[in-house]
Image 1 (cartoon, one colour):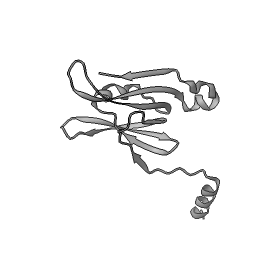
Image 2 (cartoon, helix red, strand yellow):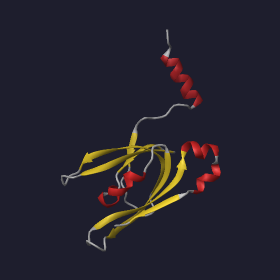
Image 3 (tube, rainbow, N blue to C red):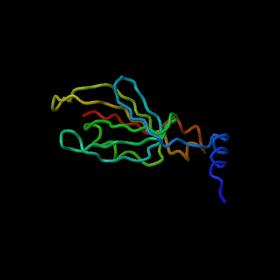
Image 4 (cartoon, rainbow, N blue to C red):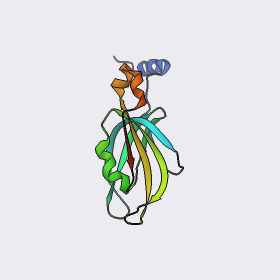
Amino acid sequence: MTNYAKIYQEAKKAKTMKSLGTKYVQWSDEGQQIVGAYLSHLQLPSRNGGVYNQYLFDTDDGLIKFALGAAVDSEAHEYFERGCVYAITYQGKERSVASGNEFKNFTIEEVGAVEELAANPDKAEGHGQANHEK
């Protein structure tokens, strides 16, 4: 018979467990940053009748969920690859030159795939960057 309690205690002692609870991040402060591996995203209905993407990242602080805002969201989800590490930095609110609408701006930097970084730590310097301004 399997002793699940014993397996749990051994995993706890070895610190090999991972919390599956998530924290939701609100972007409020310029320079606020998340660094982690992209896991997935969900399309959710927005208050104004449209849809937005809610992203799930694995970070040093555990699982993090967040949205990027419509202006960035329309492109960002196409860049993200599962298991790839990204640094996402909030640049604050800006105004679109074309429409005059205010939007949240982010810098999204690709650091590399988790497997690549484990095998070659020098690659953590990054090899891609996208600034999403509309």
